[in-house]
Image (cartoon, rainbow, N blue to C red; front, side, top):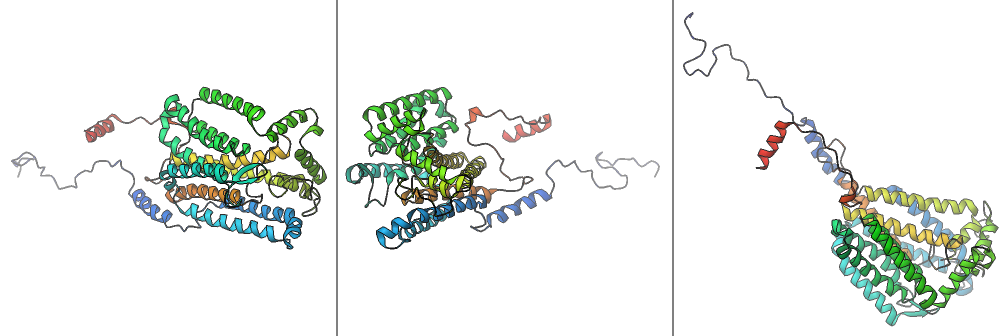
Length: 453
């Protein structure tokens, strides 16, 4: 036994007592992580439709709709009684329009918003065709052609929503070409210009300005060159001023003149604005009470649509008006949050565009009623009486809910290996800061290179 060698004849096997072979250190993810991550996916996707909707956005829009019901009834019960013999007839029409809007909102929220990217071009062509049809066969009301089917459908309202959808699809497909004049600025100006010119021909200056303004902000968010955007904005402003003062309708020129005069003397402002100021003065801090306002009886033009914010100021006072403004601010904040958390570039631009669209419409109505901008006809979103306007706004809200819903269905815990990275997908790639990555061990670099080869 003493002469027995320590290794066998092959020189490879040790004759010492057997021991388990040493294992290489494992640097992989702990075993529990893949198992939990795989279980997180079906758990999130199995959420019901109602549970996946954005509760904050629904609450905000719901409060605005409830205020709209109160104010529409308050501004139409006398008119409805004198016209139809029933004080609730016009109010019930608003309830019907709201019901249609709620149904379409839920349908739009249920459908994956990425479907609209595929049909953006046909939607734009149909909308342009409807705008042309208005000029040819539209109903003449107060010297303007803005509606079809006996005033029940206004294509210009649909054009605002379709422009947001198309711009989101077009801008998300361009990405790095947006800063180019040939492939970015010129096609953008041409597409938006067609829609705006057709709306101006009706004429409808406020809607055309809304389309141009919202599209311009979306172009900026997508990564447009700031110098190009500033020059284009200046050119559009000059063209708009020349159109209003020289080629536009007479009422637009008179409104602009009265606004310029009112800057130094508010008594020289437009009649509409003066009656709105009287309504706010009557309301004071707490208002005269719901339904007790007097300016809506023959003094305020269109108190159920364009002037409804002035009625809110009179009947609910400064506190009621501040509540409405606060609700719109909360809606904008929530919409921007949805845009930042979107799963793709199209969804981010779509959510941002829809939010900006609602904000611009609300801001325009409030600014007119407070004599900040020249008078123009623009309903207050979700509150004013309206068919096309209310229904289209509800559809836009449904698209915003769809963007949030897709995000919530794909969202996973932060520690999941399959969780999507949270990143800002609104700004173009060239505007983003370079990401600082952790150093990689040389052995891992060699292994990765070998796998790639």
